[in-house]
Amino acid sequence: MSERKHVIILGGGITGLSAAFYVQKYAKETGKPVTFTLLESSSRLGGKIETITEDGYVIERGPDSYLARKTVMTDLVKEVGLEKDLVSNEMGQAYILHNMRLHPIPEGAVMGVPTKIMPFAFTPLFSIFGKARAGLDLVLPKRSDSSRDVSVGHFFRRRLGDEVVDRLIEPLLSGIYAGKIDHLSLQSTFPQFVETEKKHRSLILGMKKSQPKPVKTQQTEKKKGAFLTLKNGLSSFISALRNSLPEENIKMGAKADSVKRLEDGTYSVELEDGTVLAADHLIVTTPYAVTKKLFGEKMFPSDFHKTKPTSVATVAMEFNEDEVSFSLEGTGFVIAKSEKTSITACTWTSRKWPHTTPKGKVLLRCYVGRADDQGIVHESDEAILSKVLNDLKKIMGVDTKPKKYYVSRMIDSMPQYEVGHEEYIEQLRGTFEKELPGVLLAGAPYDGVGLPDCVNSARKAVERLLSK
Ligand SMILES: Cc1cc2nc3c(=O)[nH]c(=O)nc-3n(C[C@H](O)[C@H](O)[C@H](O)COP(=O)(O)OP(=O)(O)OC[C@H]3O[C@@H](n4cnc5c(N)ncnc54)[C@H](O)[C@@H]3O)c2cc1C
Image 1 (tube, helix red, strand yellow):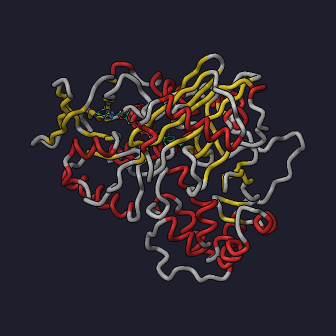
Image 2 (cartoon, rainbow, N blue to C red):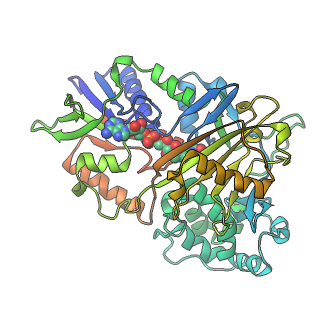
Image 3 (cartoon, rainbow, N blue to C red):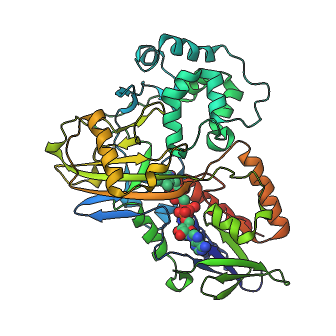
């Protein structure tokens, strides 16, 4: 690369900001003359990430943490100087609501797959028939075409039966994707189970074998949780990323309206206000519906993301400790779909993440909005709160109003990875490479919705663009 190259990054969520960081890093490390401009349509960076810090509380409106084993995010947190702020979640019992009762998730259940016999055999969560059906996993053959993508529901129903799926696996897994388990792509969401089946045939035996052996630790050494966050909230990561980048390269209130490929192979991006910017490359991290509009329907496989992303809302509520009589021994609960509740999950945030809440207070965060029923998300704050409190009263006996609460709506926010997602992605990337070389798509609609997946997607996009 001899002459100066300019990369325009569309979108200032975690993917766009990470992409900007990696472009700058690449330019510094290689001495190559690469610059970037990041365009964010709103007046705030972070996209889905937004933290409220007030009166000693750290409240996340959207994502609250990330999976620690996906280390690409921790690496970036370290690179922007926030390693000292990393916090692991407190370990504790998680529950499932079934028949309006909270049942402890049986010990040894990994993403719902039982790996310990006794807790599973004695849980009242399943009938004897349900338990026996799950046990068939031990003898069932593997699928003859185990490389073909199927839905998460289809896969687990075949191996473990409907009861275990509907009462344990569905509430656990669809909480992450707010999607319909019988439509979600197994390959794109939980590829580890595809591998487990290929290698071990039985999920129960395979997951049992792949569990790390318990390491003997000193009594004083605390076991760490599987998630990480930042003590001042995830927005502090967004600020640190922003501060690591030159201010003049970030344009706020800059809504990309159209993109054109010019005869010399470069691109022009027109903003809503009529400003036109020139680019050699583009990294596009806007939500899928926006991206599709920018580049035109014909660039995208017709069935790709044919289900609209799900809308959800979170409701964070602050209480005085002495007003919540329920003993919060654990981290929270998820809810089987058959239950007639408005909430789909509740995190006992002050227990799971003690740093978020002042002493003597309780912070609860509930989710509303299901893939097949999102109406509630569009109701008023008061109406949503009232339904949430009604559920909490029935489930936990909480019979008081919060001192303060925040309803955060995330409209069309959870992309739905349907069966065949990987193939669509390959097709889509092939079309872009052919028709619009130098335009790369990154972020939640493509390479995984988790925050580390977004960081990784950005890093790979930059590597692909600039290593040429
Ligand atoms: C309620 C909720 C809870 C979640 N919880 C977790 C969690 O705990 N852990 C986890 O790992 N993941 C979680 N996720 C998923 C994760 O938050 C998202 O996948 C991730 O934040 C997406 O980041 P992104 O940068 O790809 O997209 P976004 O955050 O959507 O960013 C896209 C940006 O593009 C901007 N934009 C839109 N149109 C234009 C335009 N025309 N021009 C310029 N800019 C534009 C938007 O304003 C936005 O800032 C959660 C998601 C939701 C909705």
